[in-house]
Length: 204
Image (cartoon, rainbow, N blue to C red; front, side):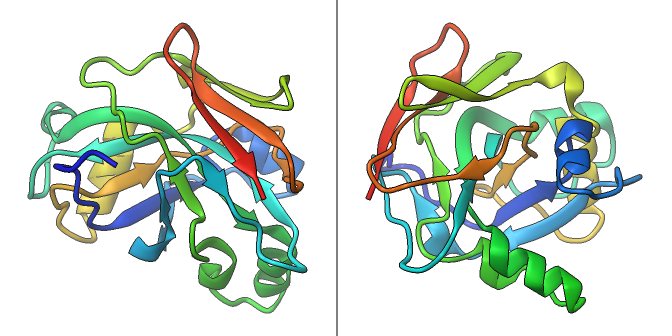
């Protein structure tokens, strides 16, 4: 991780791509569905460790970095809070998440295990690239495009800031396209934006 990058809160957006909502049998939300990961979930290394006896699925996402404190009130103001864009994986214990959902309980345990917030710490400073992808063992598993997001970055920031103040160093995982699936030990992972340097990882 860059020495000057201190992560504060980790926010995540659920069901922000219609295809992903449908593949898991969920309704498309009418407003951003927000949940959190703990700061101990941060993983900027090149290794993904899968907890024993758990089915961990990949969810490819664009990660937004917040560059200042406050609560934006307009879309233009919200955009000014974004200081960078990166690519990441919201790792999910799907079996546990399904069980928690059936019981009407929060997803925290299924989303916030150590190392479950994977991202490239080299953020792009200017306009976010439109297309992004995940390869496993050189095969494309997920592809996304900004035009398919239900809620824009600005809408997400405004929604969160209606609840809490944003802080410099917050990161936001902004939702995954369809194609989520399990990881296995030995998998070679590549995530990135099209026509930009990628991040490579190995699963152990």
